[in-house]
Amino acid sequence: MGLLSKKDTKLITDPLADNNPITIQVLGICSALAITAELKASIVMSISVIFVLGVGNVVISLIRNIIPSKIRIIVQLVVVAALVIIVDQVLKAFAYELSKTLSVFVGLIITNCIIMGRFEAFALGNGPWRSFLDGIGNALGYGVILIIVGFFRELLGSGTLLGYPVLGNPIPGELSGLYALGYENNGFMLLSPMALIVVGIIIWVQRSKNKALIED
Amino acid sequence: MGLKSTLHNLKEKYKGTKMAPAFNALHTFLYLPNETTHNGTHIKVADDLKRTMNTVIMAMIPCLIFGMFNAGYQHFAALGTPVDFLSWDAFYIGLIKVLPLVIVSYGVGLGIEFLFAIIKGHEVEEGYLVTGMLVPLIVPIDTPLWMLAVAVVFGVVIGKEIFGGTGMNILNPALTIRAFLFFAYPTWMSGDKVWVHGAVARDKAIAAGENLDAISGETILGALAQGKETVYSVADMFYGFIPGSVGETSTLLILLGGLFLIFTKIGSWRIMLSSVLGAIVMGLIFNGLVNAEVISQGSKFYGLMSTPYWEHLLIGGFAFGTVFMATDPVTASQTNKGKWIYGFLIGFISIMIRVFNPAYPEGVMLAILLMNVFAPTIDHYVVQGNVKQRMKRLKVKNA
Image (tube, rainbow over all chains, first blue to last red; front, side, top):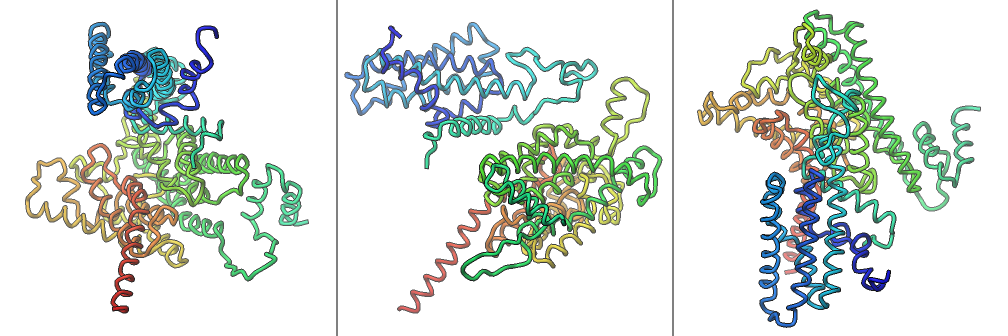
């Protein structure tokens, strides 16, 4: 890797696995539960967070030396809010249906703990380039989990992937694919508790593969 | 060479290998082991955990047999060609429908238990023996076997194994399995079509254009929730000649099973009694509201609220849940005072959910699961209260 030094690469790869914001730091759970019933929503949410966290980290890092530390939380909120409004407006303009599915959760990116967490923990103490990588890395780590959860919930809950029916036609009278054999969609997968359980299973698998991650 | 020594030799042969737990489990399931302890004094009782579990299963066998007869009886009654309750025709339908449920439940559940024991290298735990018998008794007769298998995998892995196996689980595994089925496949677990064998298939045939009469077998709770009159007499409810999940219809046999559990000191009479008390109190409150004309006849809750409080004890899964599932020693409260509170709230909340839940007129499953979660909290405060009381006594003495 000529582009990135070893240390910089770690900024991106660490949050993808061994320091994942969702499965290891257990941040950003709310949106992971709320919007993962469809794969498409998960993907859009991930992209939004990548944009907000990547740009936000850079902005905070650039102005980190001139923010009075007493009001830094407010300043951080203003930065996230501005970015989230951009995302929200773009979604409303180009993907109106999807923005309805995501509803308040786009706005609630502001309260996503991962974002404020990275501002506080990283951007306030590091330069713009490294902050950018850190932001992208953490948002990617968040996105990976969201997409895994969204994949399983949509596949098992609705029998579709990105809206495309992969398991056959479930409409009575014209059954095909797996449904003709008596298979039925699992309605539990569409409810939020199941998202928590799927995240839990990912945590279980991850920690049994890498025992060093197990806390006491 | 007898079976015991064969098993013993097999066990010795596999000792130390990964398969050892599987053979140990089989050995101790059938016989008491020959091993004795080598030092110290040990008190030995005749009934170990496996014997305890088997006693509970024995208490449930009458419900299972009755469920088989009832399955066929309800099937033919719904078809309009009634047969005698104690007839071979009725039993045969029940047998071929219920036996697969039992086999799938035990096969899948024990398979997972063995698998986890082998992977984790501990002994096979006995917990599934009772769960495996409970599960077929609390599902509708036509539940597809693959759904049951999926639910059992979920219930045993997520409900029990990840907490550390038998004895460590927070929620009753059998109810976790049923709750999973209910939320995942609601069309197979509620409504007026699932309780009688053949009703769903008949419905599908009609949808496909065949000229048949629909058969329906609504549960009493289902009918009452919609404000309809029920066609079953109180005697039917008590003896169990009503549609419902496989083994929960006969209050009489459940009562006998409960007495057997109390007599053998395996089930807690405190939980059973307080749960019935809780249900009666809630029922009386609802009856009182109706008598005081707070609830008008037009209200959608009128049907179930005006049901006499004692009838609530006979219908639905209340009796079965109280006797066989609320008393699960792992997930119930452990302290005596805690058991009274725990049981009372189960009864109280069961009837409350039963009346107010529009989607699903049965509350005992959700009430027990909810109280399972609270059982450790109840115990904590009971113990703390005890400690406080004794501290006070100590202070008075010292003063």
